[in-house]
Length: 265
Ligand SMILES: C[S@@+](CC[C@H](N)C(=O)[O-])C[C@H]1O[C@@H](n2cnc3c(N)ncnc32)[C@H](O)[C@@H]1O
Figure 1: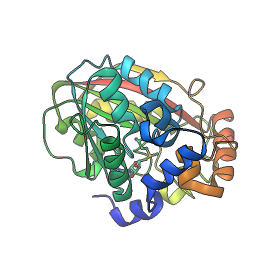
Figure 2 (figure 1 turned 90 degrees about the vertical axis):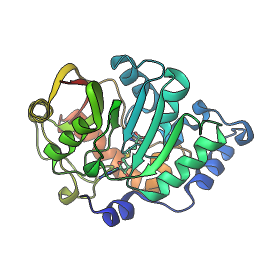
Figure 3 (figure 1 turned 180 degrees about the horizontal axis):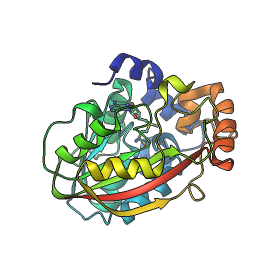
């Protein structure tokens, strides 16, 4: 099991829905008629934003009606995109309670509650199930036990089901420069190399369908990220140092970003 208290203390923030709406309003958005595109800077909490979500969805060839479990799905930006643009029915599972509450409120505000649901849950304690797709973007970095994580993904899928991942992985140059978006220091960051990760997913019962290094395509957080970006809303002034080390980690190949699609055997 993951340590829910540590996860909530690191990622969680109070009043997130209000803070997001206020920030969007200050950026000139009409929050009475907010769209998934208006929300995207504030609810897609991963490198590459909504474009990276669309890229992974195309790579995974998601079909309308697919039943998707988004593990570590945060505020639900990716889930709402999969519902609106790809016709999926998505359940978001995340350990951070304030994200689940804010995500639920944003989903209701967009009238998507019939297609997107949110629940508090631990990626390391997934129930056996028969999802068509397990989806996870930038959410496994705090989890050391990758074997257990990927075995859980396999257990949650139907045979032949699809696992779609976007994950930072250890680059050829180590160690990474801290702070990272997900960790102040090495005690909370658990990245493996792409080769090591491929071995983990294959041993968990998956066949690799696509494995793309997207480090050059998907931009990380910028020092100049606007006030209505989720990185700024959550990390505040801490974002400057995170964005600077993020740039170094990318340029010096200390961290690489992978999008992959795996089929459960
Ligand atoms: C950078 S955010 C990404 C959120 C979302 N996937 C997205 O791309 O917008 C990392 C997320 O991982 C979640 N997380 C971390 N450890 C988790 C765990 N053991 N179980 C479920 N969620 C977890 C955090 O709560 C946080 O929402």
